[in-house]
Image (tube, rainbow, N blue to C red; front, side, top):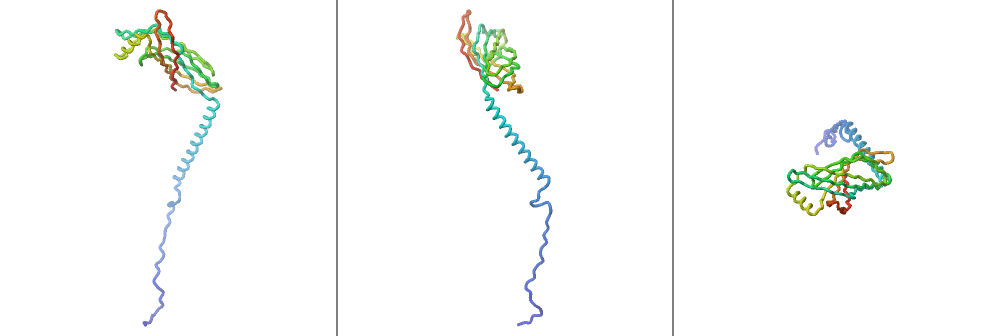
Length: 225
């Protein structure tokens, strides 16, 4: 056995490696990012709260007011002239209508600030008339009496001319009246901004001949908000 000059302490141990920690990395939050995230969260909560409040208000108003659609009817029509000249493409007409407006709401009144009635034939407007403005109370029925009389240039195609001749032979014409309105709703002491509904009334009207009265079938109109 060889002699050892010194004691044996085993293998040498390497020195520990130094670790460096950099501030601003890892789980720490960047001030700008944190501020932006907090701002977005606050905005989202505010918008969500506003939507909830508006929804509750709308539900309460609906339960209190129980709004129903206003109903429009053409109750009577008198046609004493409806002649179309192919020579100068002119339509000669004399048409009187009775229109009924029914407001079934208990707590809603309506201001009719402007009313324009247009007479239409086969998609062509041949006349128009501005009617008087008025206020309609709740649970009320009002009446309009547009009268269209005169002559106007109307360009009909060959198919439309054929339809006109067929209706002339039958003595019954298919027409349309459109009402363009500007209205405001009155709920208690509150008045809404102006609304622009459009009402379309399709009806068939027979031509009166030699003063002979004819029956007219009442027609309900379509309301488009």
